[in-house]
Image (cartoon, rainbow, N blue to C red):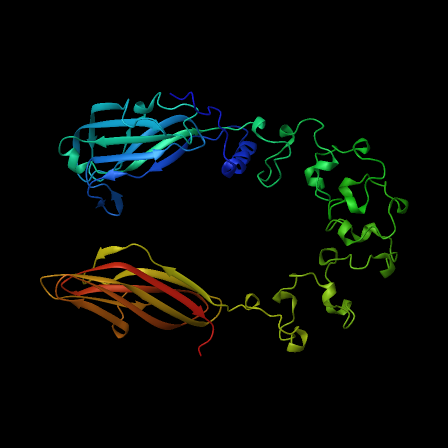
Length: 472
């Protein structure tokens, strides 16, 4: 049945990268994967157990394609959510075919399977036995599956409503035979995924290592000796910043003759590795320090008295290193700021927004209810602009009226309420906007509604809030 297919079909380019990452990270094939299959053909779809979307009866079918990375079948389960108690028998039929084969031929089935189902309780029904022997190594990306599940008699035919089907399979592994030389770069490799056990002996030389990427943290203790280092191979250029500390150097082994002129600057010295006891008194002058080599990490407790007036320029300051804590209050004037350089991101009280919306529907009563909420966290005092919308649904025979308001409380605000209603079956959209003064911190805004009279429901409400710093 499968002899004309590629039994050893490899993974597609689209998923090769993440599967290489899986194999390199775990060292073994991934666990079984799931495919969730929604009902394909059914009767009377609805929210029989709100808010769960189920079929309207115990008559349902599913169809789907076997995933391309399929290697072997694991299990299959039909998930039911009955809208009523069911004690009876169900039948299940399945058919697995591919392009060019006659659909319906050689269908498999199991009849009169007993079931006891409780109303509104999710139930997994295992149908794995139907698929035993139906798949092989070439099924991935080729086979199509159809399953029909039903209760031929009441109450199952009416009450055994279904959520969907879970199809589980084992993913096809990959081996190095499917990977071209040089195909693996650091992009598909997870952090910390490669250790000594993954590396073949003598497989790493300098051509495989990014310049200045190795630090002492990457090397096992006592793993690098003079035998591993080429003569004259190590200078300041070959050492990553802050990679060598006194722990990596044999005590008393370094002399001035070992250091090139101007080769040691702040970048070559690990933070807090050189103390005053390591430096001969009065031996370091400005001439001994490489220009632009010292950073804040190399200097401790420098005050304004230690810095010559007008001696610090922008070239001396590391980008993104100065915060508000470093600047004396009220000391910066417009003369200190380069023209047209301050952007929105540099300002604390920038605008912000949040919203809440989505599919919704419930009955209103005379008791106030919070239909939607949204929060704004203001960086400073300012203003909140809030919009709300939705739909009021009314039912006869009496005149029906619904009310809503935007408020920071949980009760209807009569001074800012809006009303929708009428006689008969109506769907009345509404929308409203309200402004608020807000303090620094988090403020919650609510859409509060109630039923003023009659029979009223609220559908698909939405609330949006934005913070602005000024009122024009």
